[in-house]
Image (tube, rainbow, N blue to C red; front, side, top):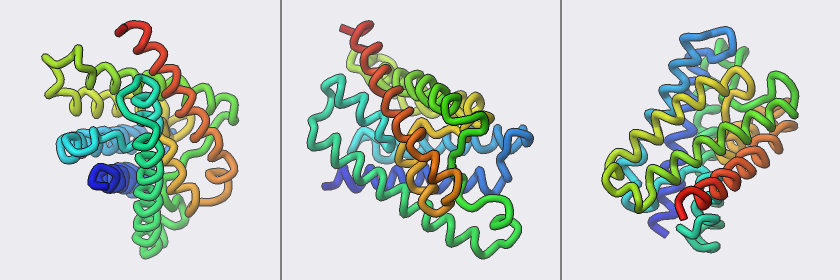
Length: 222
């Protein structure tokens, strides 16, 4: 149970700080400074959690990463399901907290509520972007945490966090960047509208990307 709770806490922190930065900075495709700030927030949140709960749960805090670990034999089916459940609960709690805070500031309510994801150029474009970016991100996670990388394993959290910064710098323009079903589910519940109607993209896309990453890693590692 401790590792499941760790995943809940970690996903809460990632969602609250990452989406919170997006909201506070007014992140949009036209606001370059806010894009960079939001990307850094998500990446640094991962780094912080990697060194906080990594020794307890492995710090997946992302169902797509959990799927990749399951498909590569690093965790069993029970842990896979429970990790995903607690990750999603953590993201929902984070989005609820953020929505409550934002509700006290009318200027933020007018522009955005929870940093939810949406497809700026249609669902097909969004699906492709999420698949490709998630595959790249999960591949980094699988490689950085592999037993064959023991020499650099202590820096895995940093490598993963920095790669998430890069992923966001590319993806925010197109989808707001999810690469994490839990991180999208939480905010979509409170945002509604387009975020909720297109939520399937940010669930299916990252899961496909995570599976592709697992296949690639198995091909080059074994």
